[in-house]
Image (cartoon, rainbow, N blue to C red; front, side):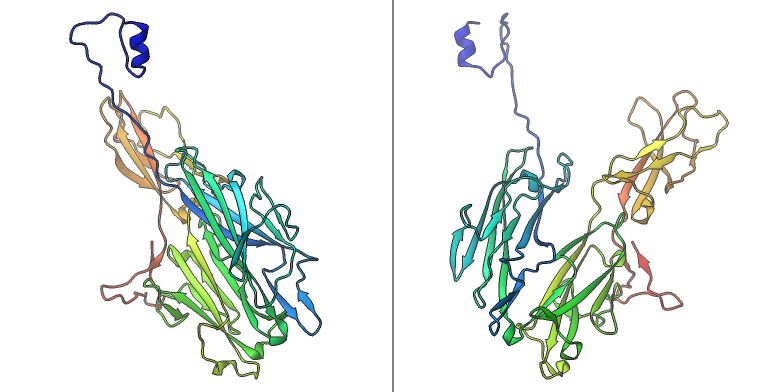
Length: 407
């Protein structure tokens, strides 16, 4: 074959010794990656809130962002179903970070010469913005983040957009603001996190907490169809309880299922009769979502002797399960551990389930005297717990009246 033929057909393989009727057939092969799951949110860093109040009588802002700036941190993370990329934060890998502000319907990019803001462009806190100007009452500012993330597996560019509303209320009008002491979205890892979370509501007028005599909190949960109901009015609210003063909602996250949406609304009456107030779309409101998620685990480690006595009727292997934080002390609270054994053979082994749990006793009946056997373990998520119900949807309970919970 000549050099000219090689240049004309660079992708084709040739042999210098050509034979009659030779034919080489090629076919492309590519990896099929799943689309990355993106998690994104904006959180307030420090004790300076994202809402100001303005006292026209004294011409003062609380807090004063020119003295104590507001710091906002975008949080971006990924979950790779293929396990190629490590799950977690990707802030340090964000590129083309840009912030915009919209005031009075006019949108402008925040550039480096704008001294009212400071933007972090790199590192673990990439995307962070400090707001160093006060907000005019009645003219809220919408901050909008634009950033990009490159998926190194495929070269695909993900566009990340988030917005945050910064507003200032007129303290002289006593407009109450409701907040919860939890993030808008909480990830619950049953292997590491406490099961019980207590959410506390706060209603403030300017810098001060609203007196209890003027407000009444109403806690609500979302049904599967998206409708809302007051906590305690649905049989499936067994994972939630409200404190006697109404300020706290206690959630047993081990019983909530895979996801729980909760919100709090406030009835406020300056005259001291909040129970007479009807809730509406203008009522103070705050919401939170709790999601159950077990991060990716390392491959389990099986410790057991390679050789066993000929008369041994069972073996007791030891199992260690780890995640990114180290050894998991009590994995059976959320994981199902299944043990299998098969006779060692040149063909595909046929496994039989023989035990469960962290401390199994595995019979040796399938261990061949000459070829030996193979022990395998499978670690699975038990899934979220829930109450048992009959075919009519009625919850089942034991003789003491306690609900029957299953996974």
